[in-house]
Length: 302
Image (cartoon, rainbow, N blue to C red):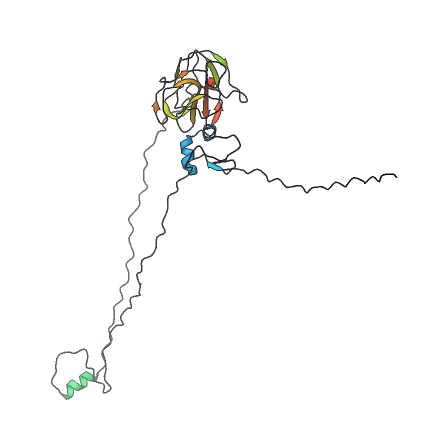
């Protein structure tokens, strides 16, 4: 007997599950992605990670979740204006009293206003019955107003003064050494440049050196991070110079400063090393508003 071969079952198409579009962060906010750390987010946005934790209400800065929205710009403090309320005062119109008129009795005898007493007689009674003579107010023709004679004003001759041409003050171009207007940069180490800046693989410059060589602050500022919490940077120091600029010093052997410490330009802040690196070197970055910029455009020529 020939075996019956069953036809293969028809494939059942599974319904496609719609993929939700990625969330878009609001202005001033950042949505956490896989692999993010708060230190990385702070560096990329030019902020202190402690400030971001405070603005976002994080109790533990080490605990952030993918998809979580963090505030990376300081909140705007708006002044609260209270409306002015009217007081409970009742306003009533003031009634103008009507002029009093003397009362006249039905018998024709006026008793008010009271005057002097006169002895009764026929002549006095007849005099009292006469109507009072109307008061005639004399009209006074207004005199024409005499206006003082206006003499034409004689203006003194004004000589035109020579114009002084004001030339705008020359300002250095931004990006050159000292060109940002407030910060004067200095080289953080004495070694030669072994890797330059590019926007893809190198966000700063690498300076050669020996373990233990001094690492100096490139400009005055305040330390906002000192530790090993950023992968690929080893022992790292980040200094914030103003609201726009940060500088980063990576792969150090020893860190000589603490978070919150103020540092001066040229102050020794670390010792050169090879942590998280294949050789002893200093990786140096300058960031403007969190975006890496070419340090060669800011550092003075050697």
